[in-house]
Image (cartoon, rainbow, N blue to C red):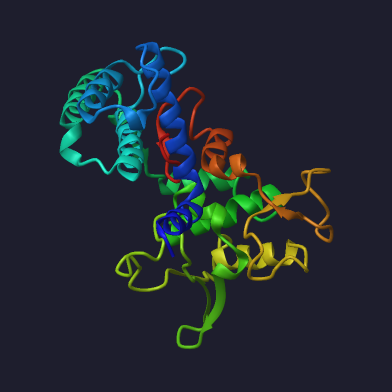
Length: 301
């Protein structure tokens, strides 16, 4: 293999989401350069000049509506630009000392304005709020929506799976159903595959034991019972290991007959899955309209 082959292999196996984000940040910076009457490609600008441009960019860049970006987003932009330049120009970290100092100062200023602090914190959900979700019929097993919400909620709660992308990548074969002879109880076990945060590169970045949730026979909120109902209501030919775990619900009625098909042979929509907890919390009244806080399971943008 030559250098081009190596570069092509790395590009083809790079995660799609970070790659798109990097391209978006590059276009944003290029737009800034044009506003400064700088027409040269980024790769052709000397490191010292580039550091000056980056410093100015970090201090003045705004969203389309004129509001400030979150501090973490600014750091992400600078990180994307550094990765891009290292890949194409073999730059060294010290060459952008000015830009990093500007970012540090800008972050302090933004935090004084309340950005990046408590408004973006993730709040835990209490037992009383969980009770409310069941009472408001956002959780349960009586309708397709209730059942999908409940299975998602149990996996999030018991397996610690918070990010939307982790749920999106989940396949039916990733959750294994079993029976513990000693405890005389059914259980569900998460058989972890590679994800965005666990890519297989770092062999130490694995859980010591497989996350497991056990049946609660005397409870009407048993997570294994909900899983069994979900399995029963899925299309019988759409339960192979490689099939998506979360399926879209039927749309012709909200309360189909128990013998009808409840789920489609297609994954649930990306936007719906990513915002599921916020939707559940809003419909139940836990999260009021206009609230800036996130409930557990949702990540700040």
